[in-house]
Length: 279
Image 1 (tube, rainbow, N blue to C red):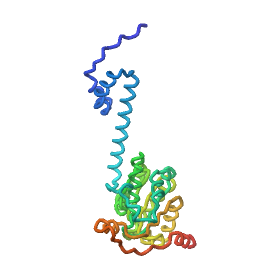
Image 2: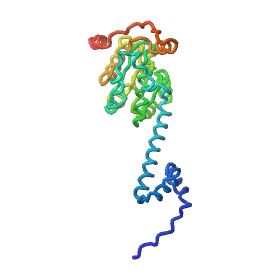
Image 3: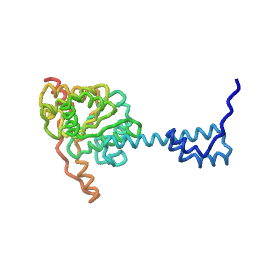
């Protein structure tokens, strides 16, 4: 059996073929790279490898941008814009270690508790941005918005489907979990989310009240204890009870010597957890 005669290669059809193969980066860059390869006498394998590297790098960049858009993370709240000097109680090395994301692989949680304006949201969002850059999928939402979303799903008899859809995110950031008092129905869907992700997917939570005051989040005491137990079992807890980060940032913009007055300290977390466990 004789080998088939190769068909002539139509270079003019290359753009259409690359479009059909969905290789937009190769389509953009091959003419210039081909000229360089001809001038420098590259072998075909090097030319092909260079094109493949460009395509893969551009795909990674497009995926990161797509995941950033779907994350809902506020723009500008990154590690580069966080003033660690304003919060001496939050070591930079610790935050950078959390931004590396090893804890997300095990479904561990991150809880930031402290005064209003202490920088909790900024820290969690900065970690979220770093995780997206590393290829993780992150969702940022206010807790009230998430509760409304899950309540609507329950009314439509689609709560399980809604929770399953959230499983695609390696990390969900729930902001202001203690901001507003929740009724039994609201706390129920929130507990469903916490229970589902327990030891499988990660949560990051910002709260301006210590655990001892979480009765406003889960009105039923038994549910409160069960929710806190699941959240803290595999968790890093950041106590952020220093001066108001926002006030200090505003004061520093107006006057380098301006220092805001301290805010009230919250309850000691470890003491309150011991009290909770003893109940």
